[in-house]
Amino acid sequence: GSAPDMGAYEYNPDNDLSNEELLPTNYSLSPAYPNPFNPITNINFSVPNHDRVSISIYDISGRLVTTLSNHYYNPGYHSITWNANSYASGVYFIKMQSADFLKTQKVMLMK
Image (tube, rainbow, N blue to C red; front, side, top):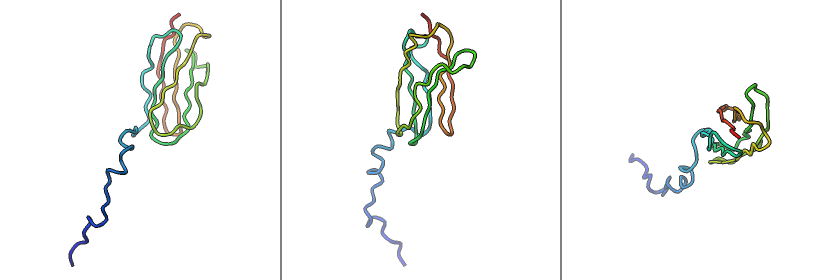
């Protein structure tokens, strides 16, 4: 009645984790930079699962200005830019949304 020798399987979990540890474990929306900006700002976000993510811009009164992205992303860190050259100066909101994540942040366009 001795316990089975686990070593016989030669299972090395490190082999499976080579890429995993580089992947985000949750959704995040990093602060856009530069902010204030003119006319381009960078938006960095992370996605832990293969999922549809939308990145949209709203104006101060809550109207949708533009949708920068609305498609499926692989797990990982992603970056998109918003060129607001054709928009007026003022406060805008970047909204990141997926099935189970929602975050909004404020940015200032100064021309």
